[in-house]
Image 1 (tube, each protein chain N blue to C red):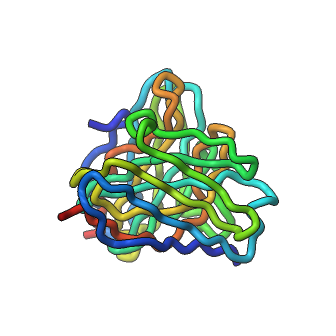
Image 2 (cartoon, each protein chain N blue to C red):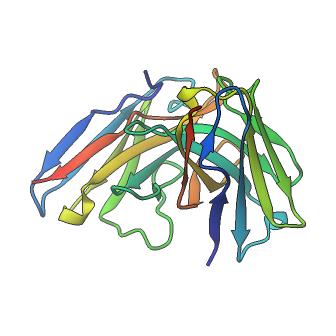
Length: 110
Length: 120
C-alpha cells in the first residue's frame, strides 16, 4: 500500500485533457515538493514536473503540475497516443524520513 | 549530455549481497547533486532505495536501511549500491538517477535500468 494514492487508471480521447491526482498527508505532500514522472513501456521513468509545478528543459507545456493542501495534480492537455504510459508522483515524507512514490496511474489514450 | 549507466550481476543467490555500480558520464559527481537508486519489481511501482551526496552523506529508505549501503567513488565518477541478505522480494529493475537532493525528491536523469533476479 503506497503512502501516496493515485487512481490505477485514467483514459481520454486524443486531443482532450486529463488530470491525474496524487493524494497524501501533511507529512508528505502537505509540506514538501511533489515531482511527477512518465514511464513509457519498457523504459526508465522521465521527470515531467519538479517542485510541484516546474518543468525541466524539453518538457512541453502540455504537461502541468499543481498542489493544494495534501493533494497534487498532473494535467496533460492535447493528448497524443504517445502519451500512453504509467505516471508516478513522488515526494519526501517527514514522518517516515523517506522518499515515497505513488502507486502509479496508467493512462490510456482511446 | 549527462548519462548514467548501471552495471552488475543479473542473478544473485538468496542470502547473498547484490552489488551494482552506476557510471556517470559528461558530469563530475564532485560538482554537486545527490545520486540515488530506485527499484521497480516486475509489474509493480517505483520504490526509492537510497541516495548519496558527493561528500559521502547518505540517506536510505527505512524499510531497507539495515541492508543497504550506497557509496561514491569520485575518482572513478561512479557510485554504488550494496544490498545484503537478499530474497526473492528484492527481484527488480534497479535504476540509478541524479537526485536534486535537499529533500526536493526529484530525479532528473536516469540510467536505463538493470534487471536483478534473486534465485538459487
